[in-house]
Image 1 (tube, helix red, strand yellow):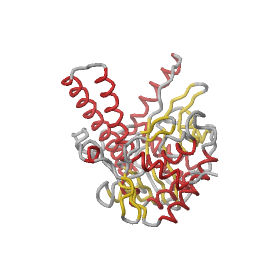
Image 2 (spheres, rainbow, N blue to C red; image 1 turned 135 degrees about the vertical axis):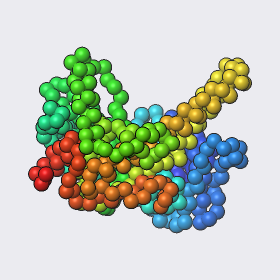
Image 3 (cartoon, rainbow, N blue to C red; image 1 turned 180 degrees about the vertical axis):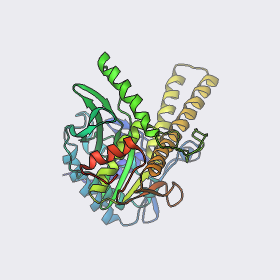
Image 4 (cartoon, rainbow, N blue to C red; image 1 turned 60 degrees about the horizontal axis):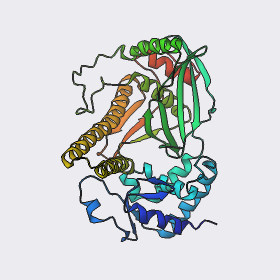
Length: 374
């Protein structure tokens, strides 16, 4: 029988150094406090180098924490059975990767966070893991198909919503939305484009056709905003049309099951630090090959700058997409931005009445499977 406390202590001790050995190495960095006392502290050279955000896992009720962690372990053990490489430490992996998606606030309230991920392993919507058509889009001249698939253990959430357009054996994939539900709140962690597969010439033509039609999301959009860059996160012209479709489908489904609150975390320190750590490992490998120091410094600075740009683009683009949907739909109300209440975007979802964009209106109403007053 697995001793959860011993296993956690093993993980927390290694996590204080930024590397956890589960067979495969994971770049996971956090300190641990129990009842206000630091049990596992990170070395000063890690905390003071200005590269990492070092969160502190604050355990204020030790008994409840380990009881909750044990409950998560038992559920995750079944959920991820057979989905982790045999040469890796299964138990250690599922309890290490649990912390990948914690916000700074989650590290301060780990029991709430663990309970959230326990809930996430329950199927959040009553959808098949196989694609099923929810109707025909006249504007896209295609069926719209959706599925809810179980995600690998290393993704942000246990389930992802997959959306695609289809016409016979031709398909166009929209970004997958990785989300979970606890009580009356949905948590959206990622809206990510699927990797491109080798396609036939006919499917490439079909994708180009759908891509052109998706720019209809700009119909009836008259808001003037000439600035389109990452320094202006409130800009709602620089949006991803295909992401708007995926989010419209999800929001429609969430309203259908009575979800009124939506949170979108904007910063996950473990994932951010893991990328920074991977850069340092790469530089160290180059150093061992006798690369000049000035060249290594240039390479590292460039990697860090690219990472900062990517991080801002990810969070800003998602925020812009939500702001655009707020502009289009009567029932989507962005109530707070990151750093106002916490590091998340908060959204209120009320009853749908109308959308001012024909394509998004069709998607939302098609998904709802009911007629609405135009």
